[in-house]
Length: 185
Image 1: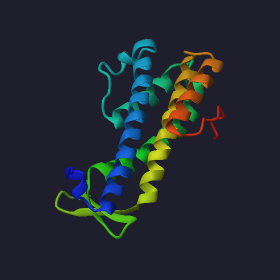
Image 2: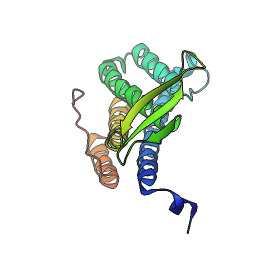
Image 3: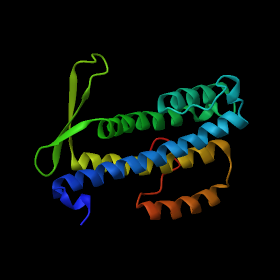
Image 4: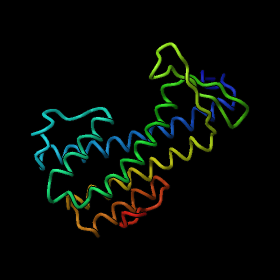
């Protein structure tokens, strides 16, 4: 018997879904780190950000600025903004999941509680379902693929054929669908 065996099954489901979200968010951040490093080393990013940004908000600001200021990358700014909006939404769900106390309300829903950002003595809360947590984890897996696709297209590091083959292998391992090369998708 392990310590995990002592938890109720409902709690174990929450642990699993939150872990799935956390792991897939880590893949998003790692992929974003690759984009940040490309910009920093090969696209003069160190001129306006001497050290590599670590926090998601700083990475987001850095990437936007680097793409806007580099003529070869500016054409990708619209697509980038769409990806960063998705990442920002998922980051907020991840923050709720990992930085809150939670109280389950039956088998499939919970209220997450954390201190307010605006008032240090006030609580704020948000309700989530298991389905929402799982969907956010799936969205993170898809976003990681889209960021990979985006970075390779923007930086031209692989041929399209090499990229499609690599992403097919990765998506089959993750169980996520292959992204379209259409920025509107």
